[in-house]
Image 1: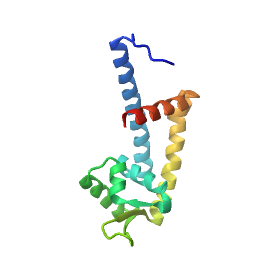
Image 2: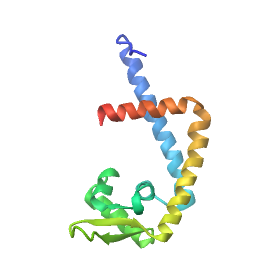
Image 3: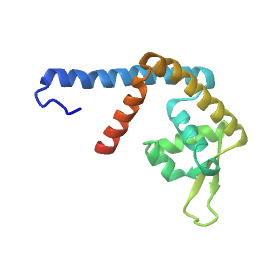
Image 4: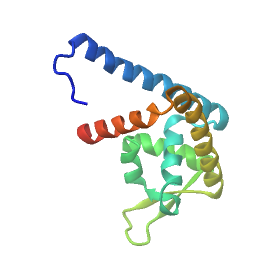
Length: 150
């Protein structure tokens, strides 16, 4: 489908506003349920998800902070809270003294797996059910925008 260059300015701005509003409403619903079930803030949940999907359930802390779009100080605060809750631990790299890994603890792995399953269940209910087959098209559209603009 070729974009219509004659699309009214107000219409295209409205479309974009709907994308943002739909995302925010959905993300707030998702994170609200995750917080209620697991007592995890959005940044903590994001970090656990990234670690559970990483090889050996660990990642260099600087890379993890970058991928989670957190400042160094912001990430340190989140990592400290996760470590205090026995969800992650810090492991020095045996190859490079400058690198420290964040790794899921046994308890952290258990929580991360349960939270990921809950996330999928919530998304099936609040995204897949309302959108039906359009959900895949939405994901592809977002992948395209990320690629073009990221």
